[in-house]
Length: 233
Image (tube, rainbow, N blue to C red; front, side, top):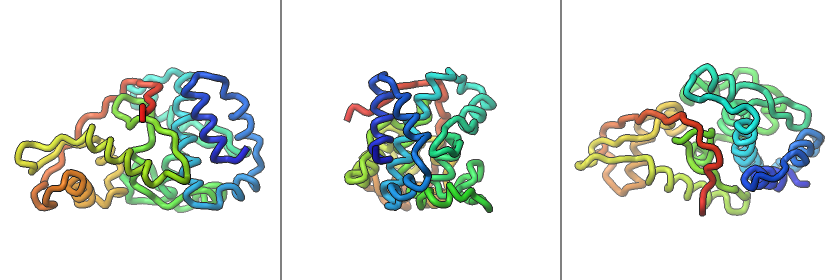
């Protein structure tokens, strides 16, 4: 089965609570050479990793029932290498920060990259598209909802995910001089071009003058587990 279709089928199996083991085995057994060939297209790689990240978060939550209220438990959950892809063990952090954030160091807020990423990562990572932050679901209440991404429709899908997240998470004050926003913008501020980039993004979304919005207030993140948060769209 083609790698992108395999990522979609795994996510569907997770959503419908049907057996995912055959898909997981196929992901493990697919030769790396074939994986590289099937994911030569940058957009196909991006969609493959988004679907797999969302699928494996749900799969690992089912197996481990983690407590995200404990920071150490969260770190262990996302950094544990439990995902076997073509014989290479990866963590959720490897997928998010290595593959989808172009070898970014996870704690650097988007300002530092790894000095020596693995060959596997260099072959399969994609240039940063900040919209991934509105598509990746980490299993907590404050995460964006999960959608099924397709290479042919991904640009519109990612734009829709961004618009939905901004509508749900951004709260402008009455004179629109400040906004309460998700902590995602704080953790990955470099990905958005710093505070100026975040303000520009929000200003564009709400059709307001960029100079009108001057202050960002980062809302606490709700780390309570919320599995199965699939988009109804």
